[in-house]
Length: 169
Image (cartoon, rainbow, N blue to C red; front, side, top):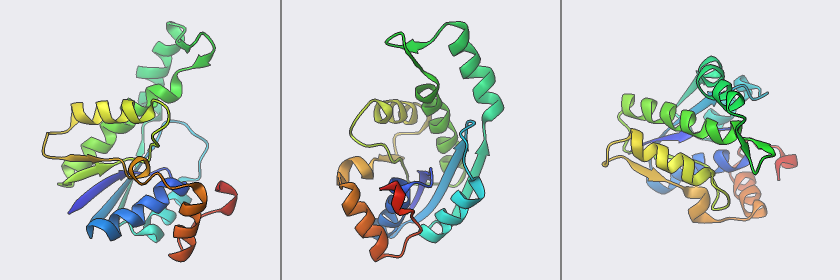
């Protein structure tokens, strides 16, 4: 089994990278999409491999995100409840599209994301993935399904010597 994982390099996705590998005996292909967030992408790649990924993709989507998403958001004064910019929410569609593109190229049986059961990110990602993927490619939501506490995730990571920063917990 091959699984493409939307990978941020944080505690949740680092833990589920290893968990998916152990649970399914799967080859994990991590995908990190850069939409302009201030992140050390080399460190994310190193962390992905240390967590069990067999391959890692970095996708520079900054220009596309700015041109096709953020510019329209600004033009139409896209604010949630009239106060919060929608740029993070808008990025989920683009992240899902890139994850699906790579999953199909790599012949993956499933894709996975690290959204929790709280908030609307899970809905945005899953609706977008459903649009971009054929029906035979499963969408997995292990963070939501496991529903582990931060302490349980940290314990899992430490037991397996995964590269996490304790301040993340």
